Length: 72
Image (cartoon, rainbow, N blue to C red; front, side):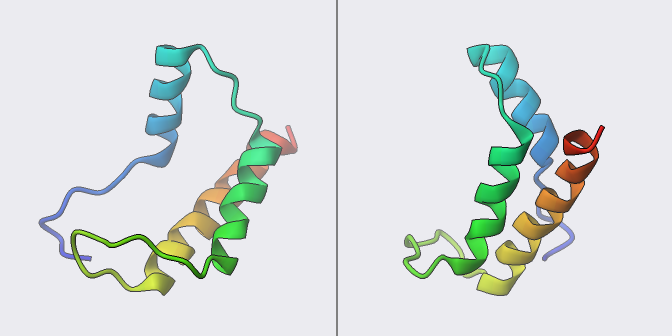
């Protein structure tokens, strides 16, 4: 990733969605959906080239972070 590009804060995005839509996000379901990204095979056209392993790793790391909320 280019160091001049903004990074995406996944948990901040989830908090904003909850506040905006008053929508409870189940950490177990979200974690399972994030882990399912590794099996994706049909990709949208991207605005910039991105390595598929890079975004798969991102989603896997976000799923790992959810373990704390799941096992509290």
